[in-house]
Image 1: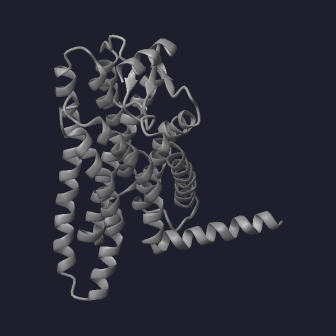
Image 2: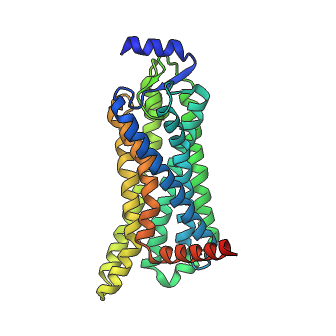
Image 3: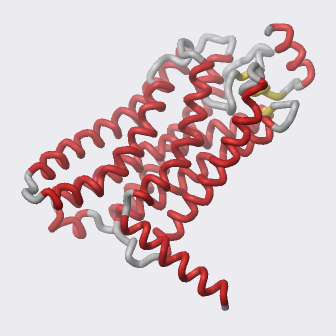
Length: 318
């Protein structure tokens, strides 16, 4: 491997070589097809959710404001990484420039941390809707929703800025082969030839804040929701209340479980071979599944999609 790396570095000086599945060439074609189909589905599904949330007057509640931002995050999330992965899989070079790599992991971490806070805001929305239904419209007003969303975007950007400032200072001593599909901060730290204890500690601290704090708030919210649902006497009422939360719980699980595995351990000790496939999961599979989870389990969204399709078809026929 060392001789191969040296030849690659000699050919692509100044760039990073993204290993991906180059060590398993038989995987490249099927993975390319899976990524391409998943990306198309992710783009179409998330754009559809954004459109119906913005255009349908019946989907004007705070829940759908947060959902449209979640879909926008997932749309940007996949676009940050997947086109580069598809290009590399179809090319013999499989490289990314240093500046391109920096921009990629900066945006990727910005979006990821923003999504953590948005998911927590969605849990708060469900808590108020089920536990305080008579005061829902007063508590979850539009200014509060905008403040929560703004906080998510600004705090995510602040985290990304800190990570970028620390990571760009790392020396790589000619080591430019990333055992990953795209640029990520843990992989960059792993690649560095310097003492990365400060980077490790800062990454662990910030990730603990952005992953564990929202996750604890989500779990507390659903603890109160579960108590409120159990007090509902009719089984139909309990089923309806559970139905409004189940989609969010599934999305939270798909997002948080891989993130916890990837980031709540020192970058110097995690398995890059396992990590790159987990990165692939939460960078493309989760954003692809999210709109279908909300569509298939939400009657209001399905009806809004039907109305949007009918209006579009009528306009097309004119």
